[in-house]
Image (cartoon, rainbow, N blue to C red; front, side, top):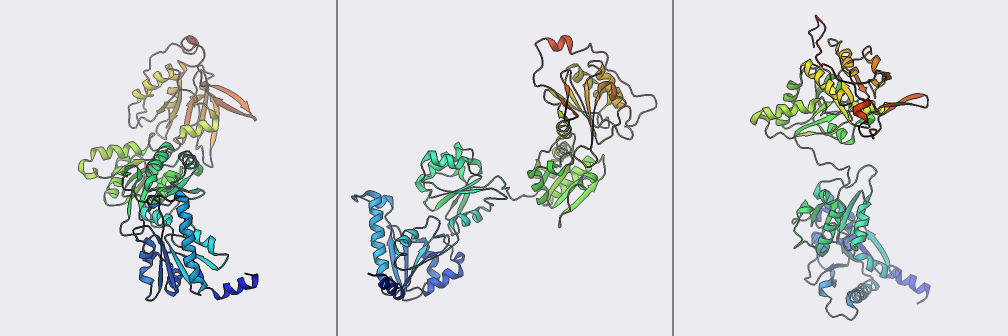
Length: 529
């Protein structure tokens, strides 16, 4: 046939349209698809040997009387039998026969709609017909809700967020390729499970993704099934199922409970994404007033601010709110588990009996003040170190002095929290005296105040100067060990403690002085905290 004849045939012939009908729910078919289905002269659909078609069932409410139906029985692997060409030969014969049947309708001027489950462009069988017929006839593809989209909705998970990349894979891939592609994926969807389920599960386990994987079966239908993939029995997994691996940005919908978060020392960049998400999802924020002031106000959130020294009352309030069905974020500075609210909330929960027995409590880590000051100064915590609070509000001063004595004798780097307050002014000098019994006066000391904030101050001094240093409750002090060194880089001092510790026996002979009594009493007349 010449070109003029071909054009004339296309003008007189019908149109073939591959229509996505979604995952199976008639309500998930697009308005355009409904119109085309109801107007078509011929409705074609794929099915297996049993004759049932999910695509036709979804489109059934929109079919009209008098339409011609073409059932395209697809030869699945279990039905090939003794075909001389094997599976590939059987499929080739099937498409040749199906193309011929539909072409006769088109040549007669009938419009043909081929129903395709999900979206025709996502592993749709219609594409094989489209490639064979589009050169002769007008061919159109109408998108539909994909099984992937329906499964993500059924599982109530965002597959990808922010800059994450979604990888869509067929379960029929070879084992090594499946593992390789999963290993490099932020998030993944694996289709065509059925008899490939065991291989897919193994690949997920080997790539460390099994605990994030969700199994979805027949999404969007009345037989929908969603559960963690790790617990699925391989026997009976249908072909119409898939596996979802949400990206790491995914978080389960927060349920009522208490989440204790650390804001870090002050720089907003040091707030972890996990803590930020927990704060955003909270209905109520509880915390010390200056710390809550660092959290942006969000519409609808209730803020419960309080003063210092009321940790028990603050914890009880948070637990009561959660018991009433609220999502509560208890806000701490730094890390909530280091001299902060995590211990206070857990202590209250443990002693509250049945009152808070069913309230979930979660602790989320934050950047500590010690880490922040150390990073700004270099790497003074590069070897063993000890963290101590010098506040004697909750423990006797003599306990503090004894612990400083032992830590200094052990030649540990010391990170000292709460070195002074308005009523505690003499303790730091007393601690410096204790440490000087075991360490050289030239030992490097870092004094960091408000690190990570606009008014940050950082000094590198010596142990001999520590007693006279100006400090407050926003200050953290790091006292080096005998191995801590100071170098000058780019015009400023950089403090570091090497990971190695000299030659065997050196520490005992040359790095430690003989300890003396650790008894330290407050100056006469100073009995306040």
